[in-house]
Image 1 (cartoon, rainbow, N blue to C red):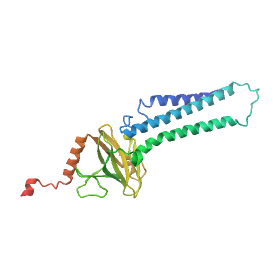
Image 2 (image 1 turned 180 degrees about the horizontal axis):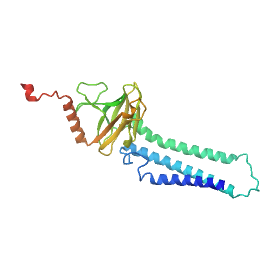
Image 3 (image 1 turned 180 degrees about the vertical axis):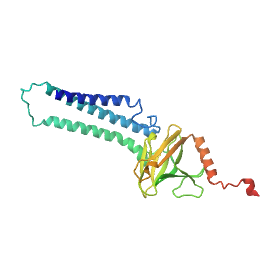
Image 4 (image 1 turned 45 degrees about the vertical axis):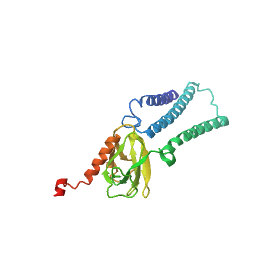
Length: 267
């Protein structure tokens, strides 16, 4: 009976794994928000995730079924039948070493294109421009934009526009941010876009993405950066080109508004 009990346990594990893989996408259990990646590179990352998930699920279910089968046969075997001991099977050992190695190599080669597209400069979209400098610090995101109709430069300019915990980008076009940190290591993470990059002291790191749908998305720190890590939360707002231009113009005017009207200045 003990062998049959453990057979049932392994079969339940296998069935639970299959059920989880089947229903998780419908109930949005794998990813945050709508479950759909809302950036072009995020969609490719999701596809890679599901490919790996299928491979792992097949292996997991296969191993559990094989273990259950062996235990079931052992439970049915009469107690007077002597056990057969083996010192191993070289052919089987080669097979179960080579096959996982081939699978891992195939996955490694498959993901290289996704990784290169996200991180290697020569793969960046040609029409991309750096839209903001994002500086992480304990415990907030400080964001610097160029003034309207100007290009963001590495060194700050007097007419640059600043926000805190509020990153605005145009939708349906590739954009980049220049990521840096003012103190310790942080991690720029927008879960719904599948964009994550560590911010390292002393380095400026380019991060590119293309948001595919207007909306407001969480911007969080994914690196334990101190006692206030839990509250280091901002937002990324994706706007149409027209709305983004209008927002940047308004933010510029509000920042440099001295509170004195034009009529009062002339007086």
